[in-house]
Structures are given as C-alpha cells and as structure tokens.
Length: 529
Image (tube, rainbow, N blue to C red; front, side):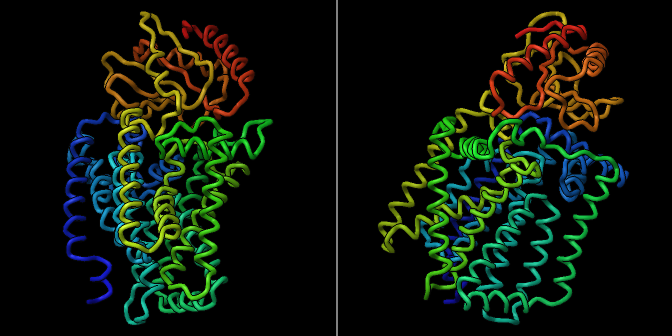
C-alpha cells in the first residue's frame, strides 16, 4: 500500500466527500437567507468597478489584494441575489474538510485526532460565519491549506523528480494575492521551519534539499507575486488611499501588557464556550496554554530521533507562537491591529486548530482507544461551542460584533425627528441608519459620502469618503454635513458610533460622550440614549 493510500483510506475519502456535500448544502441554505452586511456590500461594489485605477484606489483603502474582487465579477454579473457572490467563499469552504484532514495526516497526526480536528473546524462558529460571506477569507484559507500541504509534501518527499515545488510556489504566491494576512502565516511558518532546521541539522538539510529542488521558474513566479503585492500597496498609497485599523491600537496611558491581554481575551471569547471577559483571568489561562504550546513545540522540533513529520508538527507550533507574539508586537507598535475585529486575527484559526491536536497527541499515550476517547471529548466540546455561539451571536455579525453588539439594535428611537443615539462608550463605525423605504444594498459613493448596507434591508451605513476612522468627537462641520445628508436621504434615525478601543478609561468615555452629545445637538440632532 502506497504512502498516500495509508494517509487517506477509501473510507476516509468517502466520509469526507459526504461531509463536504453536507457542509456545502448547509452553507448554501444559510447564505440564501442572510441579509447583505455592510462589509459584503463593499466587495460587491468593488466587483462592479471596471476602471482598474479606480479599483486599485478603492480596494487599497481596505488593504486587500484585488484577487477576490476580480473573481467576484462573474458571480455578481449573474444576478442581484447575494447568494451568487457568496459562492466564491462557500465552494472553497466545502473543500476544506478534505484538505484539512489530508494536511493533518500528512504531517503525522493520528487518524482519531485528524477526524476530531476536521469536525472542530467545520463546526466552528467563526468558520461557518466567514464561509457564508462575500469577502474571500475562506478562499484565502483554502489556498493557504494547499500551500501548507505542498510545502509539507515537498519537505517529506524524497523523490526529487516529483515537482511538488511548483505547486508550493504557486500556492504560496496565490495565498499572498488572495488575503494580505496570509503574509503573516507564510512568514510564521517559514520561521518555524527555519528554527526547527537550526535545532535539527538533519531536518535542516532536508528542507534545504527541498528548496533546491525548485527551479528558477517557480522562484521567479514567487518573487513576482511578492513584488506585485508590494507594487499594489505602493500604488494604492500613492492614490491617497488611507489604511484603516488605528482605532485598535493602545490608547494613551494604556500599558502594552494590558493591550495585548485584552486583544487575546477578546478574540478567544469567540472561539470558546466560556465567558472570558475577565481580562486578568482569561489572559492568565491563555498565556499558560501558549506557554505549554511553546514547550511542546521546542520538544518536537529539537528532540533527537524523531520523524520528519514530528519535526513539521513542532514547526507548526512554533509558527503559532510566532504569529501570536508578532501580531501582538505589531499592534503595540501601531502597525497592525491586535484588539480589533475577529477577522483581523482569522488567519490564526487554522494554526489554532492544528496546534490543539498536535499538543493533545503529544500529551496522550499512543493507544488507539485512549486517543479515540480524547478525540470524542474534543468533538463534544466543539458541538457545545458551536451550539452556544449560534445561540449567542447573529452569524452574519460576528466578524464585527463587540461584546455589546445588541445595544446597537436597541438604540433606534421611534421619534419622527432624526435622533442621534450617543452610547456611553463608543466602539466602531461612523453612522448607522434605519431606513423606511430607501434600498441601499449595493449603493455607494453619494458625493462625498459612502452609503452601503449594514446587515438588513432597513439599515445602512453612512460615512465620509476616504475616512476609515473619525475622531471620538467629530467636528461640528462634519456633523452639520451629516445632518444635511440625513435630511436629503430621508433617514428617520441614526446611530453614531466613533472609533475607540474598548480598553480606554471609563472617565474618558463619559467625557467624550458628553462632548459628542453637545456637538450633535448643536448640529440640529435630537439626542437620545
């Protein structure tokens, strides 16, 4: 029996195929009933832009490569139903069970744990949410899985005539062009492999030989992919496109430790069945888990007489630690948001799932019955997490939802005037609106303003163009212009949300809310709470 047949048995292929079809059907049914969120409407709008320079200018504001928007064009052209563009995420998502199981088995994960991890991934609330939205996050994850699988096969294959390096370079280049955060994952994985090679010279020689088996066309393709992404971002900045995300960096007077702890706990809340909003306790638990992961990673990477598969497992654990530490440091240095929306850390999800089963496999005895029991407990926990998450969050809002998301729905007033609701603490967005008749699902660019959907036919988002974040207290001129635009469009209420990291001191938030209320009333809004 060949190595590939040992990794994927006929029964595995059959059940994975059935699971993928069930997942595909579930995603299609759910996606057909979901309203278009404001994030999705951006990308549907991008897919309608024919001018390449305008496309670069618009997409560059969101810091995303243009691949997803270009691929969306034929889907958007089919018709106005949002299900069509969502298929660009749904179809790759349905392939992930097979790819994920194959990847885990290829790096030496036992069959019970590979099955458990695949089920955990496919029942994850975050995975199911992002698998049903227009933005190509799960497409990027699928490409990244292909890249990791190709890299693993290139390192583990002793047959130099098998040109796995071609697929590896193409997949890595495709990952760069599909989602910018793939750069973090590829860099972290490369770093983990390099560190493992330094700890084990035999593994290092294996990796070096795998790199040498690639030839200049593959290397040139990979280099052009990276340079192309760099040129795209330079061009987008040159067109005065403004990056977003500065609202999630440390606020004045906040320590780096508090900032990192809040970022860790906020994101972990979405992946567990527990309430981790107690920052001190949650950060302690997460730090302990990361410390254990680091220890197991060093053990696998540096322990003598282990297989190359075990070395790769150690590389994955070290890559996860590198991702967490690197992204936290970038946030502290005001270069990348750590404590922001879940989608900013979505690239961590595959590494988290892989790390979980790698550590469990290392800590459990190599007894099939014991591993099957542990894997069953893991699957039961995944079902609990999925059920609790779906009972807690709207699956179309988790990518943006702060812990107090429900307060937004309660804030719309019933007055006939145009009230602006001022929260006691501000979080994200600019101006949300409730509409009676205006259909804004795919509209955009109204003069100096953007208008797009925000999760339901009766809600839209309105904000000044080329401004990702507005001050916690907008200028009176901006509020006056906002009032005029509300009158013009016939809005009956707005919810004003300003960018502010949730860790800011409560005294500052109270003072900001009071000043914001004063300026809103000065601009002609009727303020309600």
